[in-house]
Amino acid sequence: MHTVIETTGLTRIYGIGDAEVRALDKVDLKVQKGEFVALMGPSGSGKSTLMNILGCLDRPTGGTYYLDGEDVSQLSRSELAQVRNRAIGFVFQSYNLLPRLSAVKNVMLPLLYNVENHPDADERYDRAVTALESVGLGDRMHHRPNELSGGQQQRVAIARAVINRPAILLADEPTGNLDTRSSVEIMDLLHRLHGGGATIVMVTHEPDIATHAQRVVCVRDGRIVSDGQGGAESCLDRREPR
Image 1 (tube, rainbow, N blue to C red):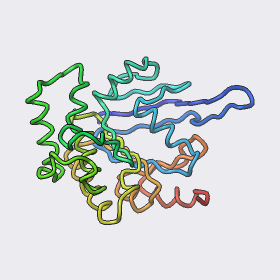
Image 2: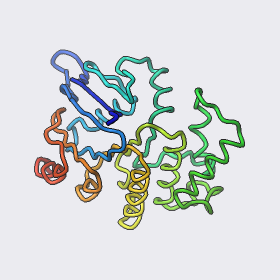
Image 3: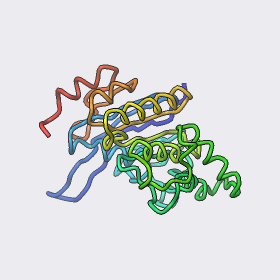
Image 4: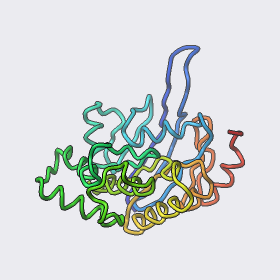
């Protein structure tokens, strides 16, 4: 089985001396190609720091991180940016769409920064149209974000995330700003992507959303405290009041 994510002794320390904060403390994690994994944990648990490192938005203080077979632990910021664009698709709670651009132009953006495989304008447009059609928004291609519902904006964000056919899809609270109906639609879409072979790592505070994943990894005090199919409830039991 092909390992897409492998961390060994992953550590992230902020500050020095008495102000030192160990956000991650020797985290070992493996995610296989095609898995759907949920990360859970209370505020300050380290799950956001872990997500940032997995997404090549930050570098660890210690330990190693192999992404799709490549050691990305100590890459420069510019090198990390290239890896992010090539190998990682991001879905954020707040969608992060550019307000002045249409849906299709938002989805095309990652293709503009793909330095290894830079498609021409026609191919960028065609691929963006196909991606939007795949998330059920073929009739909303030329709408701007303020002309779309929250659920539709998240669908645009998902289309943008998969346009470069990334090794992994990182979803950070993908239903956090959505009503129940839209949340169900987004989870159905993620399931469809997963069924098509996508590797998904999702951060969520919601146990009912976490149960959609194959595995639930619970993080607390910078360490993984549980990892398995029954992890959602055990992680909920460990959480502090919000």
